[in-house]
Length: 351
Image (tube, rainbow, N blue to C red):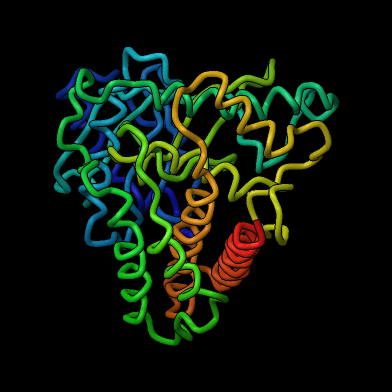
């Protein structure tokens, strides 16, 4: 199901486009796919002694794929002079006439993704792993402090009624998967209606609006190789303007020891040394003035949202549009996320 790199970009057209923008010269060489999410494509290449990373939709793009690329590039451009660690935007191609889809170029990030394995010294030190957990929290809290008005991000998202829209928006997303042949439907997701109803009836007062990454967890950050600090936050596909506590809830929803069944994906090993989930919350509170009294709601919402997103890959796999084993693995993760949500809801009722 993987597409060869040479089919994802026409190097001749790309070179012509880069020439018009003064982006190096000569042949495009060493085109190499990079690991990433299941939604979009990352390719690294070199030209004229400079390295680039190209991000584009898959060969069979979704209806909103080009707009997603435009939004990501706009956000990365806005963050250029901020303290937020992110890949530096080089250039954006808005139109699909060059490569068949919108795309953008960014600077490569030197570092590693922890779900792909920990190198030394991180693997060898429990203290280093503890620091990695706190660095994860600090990275997103830095984003949450950004004033999106001064960053030129007016209209990037609608913060009014952001939390109110979440349940309906993601239930509609789940319903849209019925177009995929052979998907068994939502009946395989435990407690779907119970979780949905609980979120609707326990809606909290939102915190002050800000930039939301929307999928903040270990798979979407890179760490420095020489120390346990973040190198960059990556994969901004779900970014918007809304309630930033969504991101803190996302960390806890995917955190290994935060309660409920283990997730089949997003695992980091070895795990000893990483902070407990409660310590992450305490650490965030040291830097942020946001009210964390209703944080449990955000964790349940994160389980709900992420589970529905991952179920989309399973639905595509059922229709032969994604790898079958990947689809099954992500469906198992969806089930585990909803079981985590149900456990948190029941604990909340018990108190």
